[in-house]
Length: 120
Image 1 (cartoon, rainbow, N blue to C red):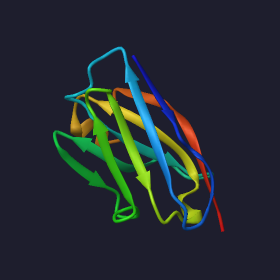
Image 2: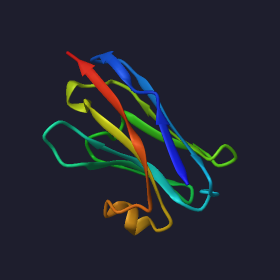
Image 3: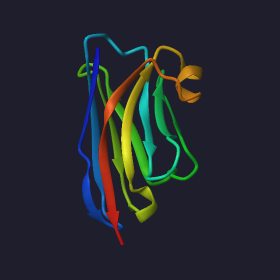
Protein backbone atom coordinates (compact mmCIF):
# COMPACT_ATOMS: atom_id res chain seq x y z
CA UNK A 1 0.00 0.00 0.00
CA UNK A 2 1.41 3.35 -1.00
CA UNK A 3 0.24 6.93 -0.89
CA UNK A 4 2.11 9.22 -3.24
CA UNK A 5 1.75 12.93 -2.62
CA UNK A 6 2.89 15.62 -5.00
CA UNK A 7 2.16 19.16 -6.10
CA UNK A 8 3.99 21.21 -3.49
CA UNK A 9 6.25 24.09 -4.33
CA UNK A 10 7.31 27.64 -3.65
CA UNK A 11 4.62 30.26 -4.12
CA UNK A 12 4.07 33.86 -3.14
CA UNK A 13 1.54 34.84 -0.53
CA UNK A 14 -1.90 35.00 -2.04
CA UNK A 15 -1.09 32.32 -4.57
CA UNK A 16 -2.58 28.88 -5.10
CA UNK A 17 -1.50 25.28 -5.32
CA UNK A 18 -3.17 21.94 -5.80
CA UNK A 19 -1.80 18.95 -3.97
CA UNK A 20 -2.57 15.43 -5.10
CA UNK A 21 -2.28 12.11 -3.34
CA UNK A 22 -2.60 8.91 -5.32
CA UNK A 23 -3.12 5.59 -3.56
CA UNK A 24 -2.14 2.19 -4.81
CA UNK A 25 -2.39 -1.31 -3.50
CA UNK A 26 -5.82 -1.06 -1.92
CA UNK A 27 -9.26 0.31 -2.71
CA UNK A 28 -9.62 3.37 -0.56
CA UNK A 29 -13.12 4.39 -1.60
CA UNK A 30 -14.43 3.63 1.89
CA UNK A 31 -11.46 5.10 3.69
CA UNK A 32 -11.13 8.50 5.23
CA UNK A 33 -8.52 10.24 3.10
CA UNK A 34 -7.02 13.61 3.73
CA UNK A 35 -4.14 15.77 4.78
CA UNK A 36 -2.04 16.78 7.72
CA UNK A 37 0.80 19.28 7.78
CA UNK A 38 3.85 19.95 9.86
CA UNK A 39 5.50 23.34 10.02
CA UNK A 40 9.11 23.76 11.15
CA UNK A 41 9.37 23.38 14.90
CA UNK A 42 5.71 22.47 15.28
CA UNK A 43 3.72 19.30 15.73
CA UNK A 44 1.90 17.70 12.87
CA UNK A 45 -1.67 19.01 12.62
CA UNK A 46 -4.87 18.04 10.89
CA UNK A 47 -5.77 19.99 7.75
CA UNK A 48 -8.70 18.35 5.96
CA UNK A 49 -10.39 15.00 5.40
CA UNK A 50 -12.93 13.45 3.06
CA UNK A 51 -15.15 10.76 4.56
CA UNK A 52 -18.24 9.16 3.12
CA UNK A 53 -19.16 12.15 1.02
CA UNK A 54 -18.50 14.70 3.74
CA UNK A 55 -15.53 17.00 4.20
CA UNK A 56 -14.03 18.46 7.33
CA UNK A 57 -11.45 21.19 7.76
CA UNK A 58 -9.25 22.71 10.39
CA UNK A 59 -10.51 26.15 11.36
CA UNK A 60 -7.30 27.74 10.15
CA UNK A 61 -7.90 26.65 6.54
CA UNK A 62 -11.69 26.88 6.19
CA UNK A 63 -12.69 28.97 3.22
CA UNK A 64 -9.25 28.73 1.62
CA UNK A 65 -8.62 24.99 1.25
CA UNK A 66 -10.86 22.55 -0.58
CA UNK A 67 -10.50 18.79 -0.40
CA UNK A 68 -11.90 16.52 -3.05
CA UNK A 69 -11.42 12.95 -4.14
CA UNK A 70 -11.77 10.77 -7.19
CA UNK A 71 -12.50 7.26 -6.01
CA UNK A 72 -12.08 5.83 -9.50
CA UNK A 73 -8.51 7.13 -9.54
CA UNK A 74 -8.07 6.54 -5.80
CA UNK A 75 -6.76 10.07 -5.52
CA UNK A 76 -7.45 12.86 -3.09
CA UNK A 77 -6.76 16.50 -3.88
CA UNK A 78 -6.23 19.60 -1.81
CA UNK A 79 -6.79 22.92 -3.54
CA UNK A 80 -5.09 25.65 -1.58
CA UNK A 81 -5.97 29.27 -2.26
CA UNK A 82 -5.00 32.59 -0.70
CA UNK A 83 -1.82 31.06 0.64
CA UNK A 84 -0.24 32.66 3.70
CA UNK A 85 3.31 32.39 4.98
CA UNK A 86 1.96 30.45 7.96
CA UNK A 87 0.78 27.74 5.56
CA UNK A 88 4.43 26.86 4.98
CA UNK A 89 4.80 23.22 6.00
CA UNK A 90 5.34 19.72 4.80
CA UNK A 91 1.94 18.38 3.79
CA UNK A 92 1.24 14.70 4.33
CA UNK A 93 -1.59 12.71 2.88
CA UNK A 94 -3.06 9.92 4.93
CA UNK A 95 -5.76 7.27 4.85
CA UNK A 96 -7.65 5.47 7.58
CA UNK A 97 -10.36 2.85 7.70
CA UNK A 98 -11.82 4.71 10.68
CA UNK A 99 -12.76 8.38 10.71
CA UNK A 100 -11.95 8.58 14.41
CA UNK A 101 -8.48 7.15 13.89
CA UNK A 102 -7.86 9.71 11.19
CA UNK A 103 -9.00 12.60 13.35
CA UNK A 104 -6.88 11.37 16.25
CA UNK A 105 -3.87 11.67 14.02
CA UNK A 106 -3.39 7.92 13.82
CA UNK A 107 -4.31 6.95 10.27
CA UNK A 108 -3.51 3.52 8.93
CA UNK A 109 -1.37 4.82 6.09
CA UNK A 110 0.85 7.85 5.56
CA UNK A 111 2.24 9.19 2.35
CA UNK A 112 5.55 10.92 2.04
CA UNK A 113 5.36 14.65 2.52
CA UNK A 114 5.33 17.37 -0.08
CA UNK A 115 6.82 20.74 0.82
CA UNK A 116 4.75 23.89 0.50
CA UNK A 117 6.66 27.13 1.01
CA UNK A 118 4.91 30.48 0.93
CA UNK A 119 6.99 33.60 0.59
CA UNK A 120 5.76 36.93 1.89
